[in-house]
Length: 127
Image (cartoon, rainbow, N blue to C red):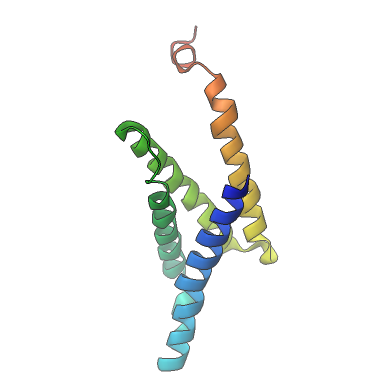
């Protein structure tokens, strides 16, 4: 259960907020006064979400899985990263990091415990 907590602290708080928002904003304010507003544009938010999702997905590439399973996991983690990145950018009065932790935990529970109980062949074939 600590993985979602640690991952969200790192990916949403440190990468997405500190490295991709606060530091650029402070540098722009210091060296190009008035330009720090760029960091709060929709384009900058989308870029932050994409970069943090890519880092999130890449961090899961070190798992020892077959090539097919690894590609599937990286795709799923990238999409999860996009969703959690959007939640983080919406902020919810400062509660976005704990909300991301809860959503990440729910996703892991669903992916690890609920999905494997279904037989994919019977779902696809309808038997």
